[in-house]
Length: 291
Image 1 (tube, helix red, strand yellow):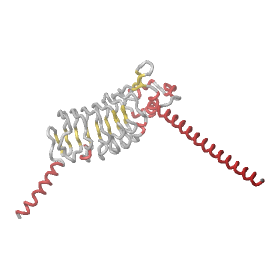
Image 2 (spheres, rainbow, N blue to C red; image 1 turned 90 degrees about the horizontal axis):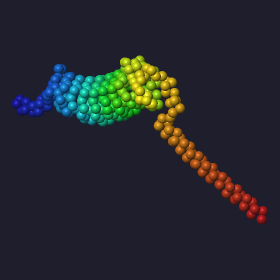
Image 3 (cartoon, rainbow, N blue to C red; image 1 turned 90 degrees about the vertical axis):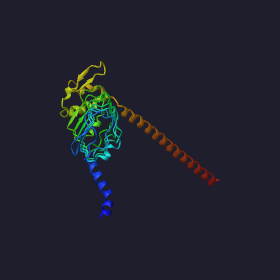
Image 4 (cartoon, one colour; image 1 turned 135 degrees about the vertical axis):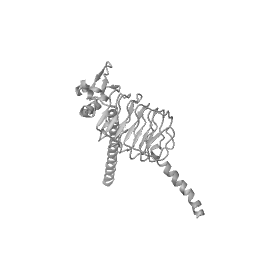
């Protein structure tokens, strides 16, 4: 009997350590009010803590000094539903870092130092419903495909950032969007903004503060005006303007047409030359026959 017990001891230790890791050990300096919640709010953390239970569903890391998220962070926490990283020191997000979670519903990245949301950052996190990216004063770029794949996203917050422009494709890729916050950005009312303005006009019911809550700077004098005072006629001079993409299409089309014309001319010239040689050959044969 005793040898059997000795033989089972390593397995019992392994099982017990696994059970402890999956919800019964709380990281130091954090609180765990239940087996699925880890609250590390305002603990002066400079990195994501170790020993987080693998079955955590609610992870609160706000009001710390965390500068980055490990690229494989969410691979280990597949049950995570709520991740709060508000008011930290995050300056960038590596593409794919937040794309490995299949259950994440709420993500708060507000009040950080983010500068760009690049394409592929969120991958296809189809379960995500609410995304907070507001109060990042250095955030001035959102990639066209940054939110592609977020088919369930209903609430998107981009208020009080450094955005002067936003590709309308960013918003058109969100079929479930119900609420959008864009106020407090230094929007520039130029021709690039015209398409976004049309989209906002058609979707003003999704703006909590309406069109009057968003202001933009006029190109001529820099005066800021609420979007509610503008109309599509305000951008009438942009109707004939071409974007960079349009110019590239025109240039590429011109090059393609030129190449096609050169190839066609070469083929036609070669064909005419061949016919001329055949014609001369036939005439020579006829003259020899007559002799």
